[in-house]
Amino acid sequence: MHLLYNIGIRIYLIIIKFASLFNKKAKLWLDGRKSRAFTSCPGAIWFHFASLGEFEQGRPVLEQIKSLDPKKKIVITFFSPSGYEIRKNTPLADAVYYLPLDTAKNARDFIDAVQPQMAIFTKYEYWYHFFNETHKRGIPLYVISAIFRPGQVFFKWYGGLHREILGFVNHFFVQDERSLQLLVGIGVNNVTVSGDTRFDRVWANAAKPMPVPAIKEFSTGHKVFIAGSTWPPDEQLILHIIDQYPDWKFIIAPHEIGVEKIEKLMELLPSESSARYSVISHLEGHFTNLRVLVIDNIGMLSSLYQYGDIAYVGGGFGAGIHNTLEAAAFGLPVIFGPNYAKFIEANDLVDLKAGFTVSNEDELMLVTESLINNEHFLADAGHKAREYARAHTGATETILKQIAP
Image (cartoon, rainbow, N blue to C red; front, side):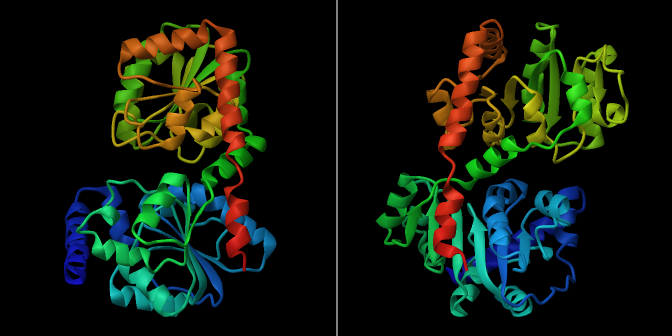
């Protein structure tokens, strides 16, 4: 199994090299790992995040550790370019790197250079050689906000190697009781149900959101529908409701903001009443005729929800929905596509009638009509969403009680 794993890692590298010839993300992934020297940070705490979403998820723990000991060194690694390229200069860390490919030599070299005191991985990503190396050296390794499902390889008859990887972890802090029971069922007992640190993050963000003056000016005096992390299938649905509610304003923040993607979206929108954020962000008082604003940057979405009344979160027509909690924490009812089953919070929001799933244009029209034309229903759904986010905070405190150095 170890041989197959190592072969699989090398095949993955070959695939990335081929993809880098025509895919920008693959090229960034590859170039970011070439001849990168690592700075020695003896006694540092090493945080690993798969991507930007996991960074935001684990951020409350990172920030609390820094508040307990401001001089504590922090090293961050990312697997994905979408995390590294956006947060490579974060002031929360002393060093930020791409995680090297998971080989025995890379794991040894990285840990020899960095010399971490502790390693914290958020939600998932289980790398055999990195986990094994921390275990051999007695470096405590924690996985926080972890989530497990019965269909994962850890719980299959052929998942022996992956169960071995779990054995290198000192403690798991899982999101729910089901995850705990799954781990206990395969003999992993070093588990605590802490909840999800994303709730702490979104609640803190909603308490002190970053002001965005241009968005405030655009929104003032109007109800606002915010569509975040959208993909083309989401945007096709939203286009159908813009004309139906002329008194509302719409903000669309696509998941991908490449020039081509934004231009295609702008072509679908009414030209006389739509604009990119980059065009209007430096203007003052010229928003009278604008009804649709397209956000053509990354990192602003979590602050936009403070100006909204209804949120639509994209991804539900693809692999799965994006972050619904950011909007919920601001007290916005959340609409999303049909692929949400594996997201606990989305299921909970639907049960509370604070979240609404749609599969087509007619269903979206029905939901938006119900919310827009019934102020009590809109306010009640938003209140339930906000209370749900508030009630699930506290995971960070639970984790720190066990791992704070």
